[in-house]
Length: 132
Image 1 (tube, rainbow, N blue to C red):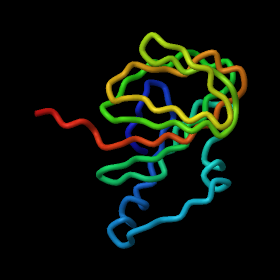
Image 2 (tube, rainbow, N blue to C red):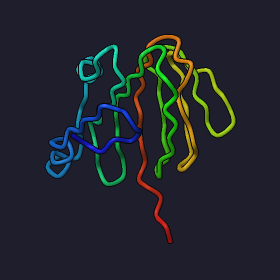
Image 3 (cartoon, rainbow, N blue to C red):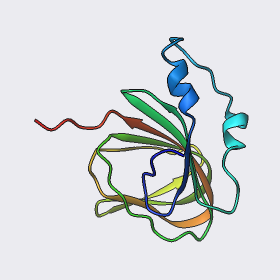
Image 4 (cartoon, rainbow, N blue to C red):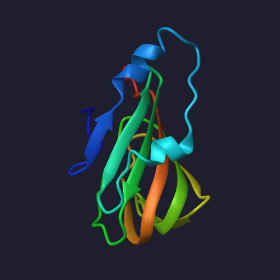
């Protein structure tokens, strides 16, 4: 199991992909195979790639899920594959649906809420901020 990014999430990390990066300069993923890793009906966070500068995950949030507020030390990019809901970043609310691409600056409080249709999101995390 990998490191959880928000309380209450089921998380798994494919460490073998991180190891493969030492052997190859590239990896190929097929979206249908990644989507099989998230079960409908439960909040699920499946990290499928981790390198020193990038982490990539599939994130599934069922309709009606409660708010899961979080802030991270990394910049984040979310791409909504399916579903409909809202993303609150600090004090601003944004409607999200299939095709929405959202950037969230590191350390900003944010949460998905009012999930009207099961959300499935690709989440990309940059390297953590370094403190001087």
